[in-house]
Length: 226
Ligand SMILES: *Cc1c(COP(=O)(O)O)cnc(C)c1O
Image (cartoon, rainbow, N blue to C red):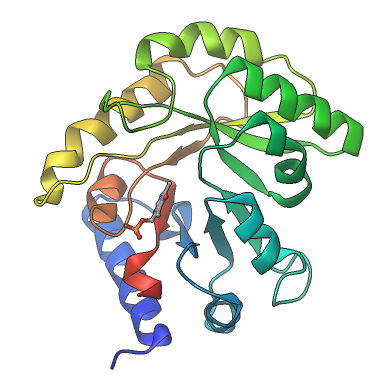
């Protein structure tokens, strides 16, 4: 049986190899452990083995596992990576260190309003449905410029960049064009903010390809927690 510590070490060494292959600095890539199938004990064990970024899809699960967290307050970051309904935005703002899944002007406005109320600045990413699959959330690439123009001045939001969920392919190399397209959108529509620095892409199946294409945040669940 492979322990969580061994799985985490394996993923970390694959990240280092992919970074070095791409001529990138390992320090520019953050591993987010996606805990949607894991419990509090696994979160705690991962923390004890050095993981400092956690990702959750659903607000109720995030609250159960991270409010309070099974590690000292503010000792790690919580990323919300799943589709977010406006009626849960207030809870998201209270919990999250980074919201990856902003996919409409309306949602950005609601998050901004709650952030103002709570006196917080919330780092955010816009989610793009690069592949156009009907099952995926996110703005279409065509909607991005107009949406960005409308959300960029909203108070108490810090725009960090873009996120996508790639389709699952048996051969991970097939995801490369999806990641390259997100990178291209990130560069082309760079609003010129100093905070614009993150590309959230790559999961268990394809994170090495995502790193080669410029990912700064990779979201890995199964390779660590199953
Ligand atoms: C579940 C999930 C992941 C992690 O996927 P794995 O294949 O388990 O690595 C990453 N991003 C999102 C949005 C997810 O829902």
